[in-house]
Image 1 (cartoon, helix red, strand yellow):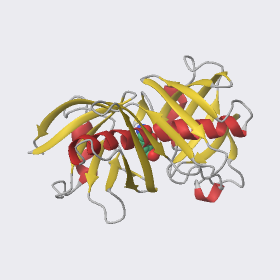
Image 2 (cartoon, rainbow, N blue to C red):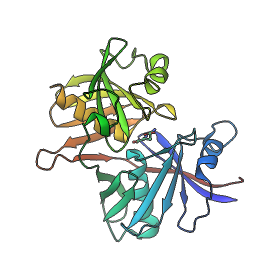
Image 3 (cartoon, rainbow, N blue to C red):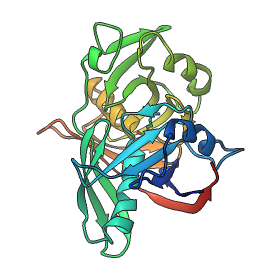
Length: 272
Ligand SMILES: N[C@@H](CCC[C@H](N)C(=O)O)C(=O)O
């Protein structure tokens, strides 16, 4: 039996396992089983919280298809809250998290007792096509006549602007875009409706998962694409199906800062 904690950040729900003692031997196999919404616990994937020799803590994130992603924005806030409450007993509110996309600095916002939100320094976006990666000479590409701005936040994203997220073809076109030959490692696809220079809405089709209620790395990629296309200022509130994230693309060091919620849902044990 494996002890787990279910958490969600803006409705992006994952199963979190304290894996400092390496209780999970095969996460690629466990993720599809435990994430299944009918035969498992039900989640957008599996997150292992591990020891690190480079940072205070390390996380690994697996999609429900078993693939491992380099980075997960919403999970990084949940891991931050988990560690703040359970490892650091609310005494250390700034620390470093090792991810597959490098070390991310975390700041916990609280009132001494209660968690309020977490800000993650997501680092600088990657725009070079070969590093995103995109099989094209530029990070601006067209698929089926639709324009995408491709951005990596450690994991690959392709952002497209729509008139309305409500009618955007997330479910009908998302799967084909994710697998398009332009994306050698597949891609997360963001459909974005800009409401004002400081406010936008986004729906996402996630690589290895399908539509989710929110994507943190996708939100950061969205702001970068908005700025590159002259659609918004460098700081926005981004409305997702499961909540709102505050995203800022700093001018001084080019880092993207993501602030948002992280909530415990329930605890349990899972029989592998
Ligand atoms: N929901 C996540 C991203 C999860 C990984 C993604 N599906 C991928 O394969 O890159 C987030 O909040 O960033």
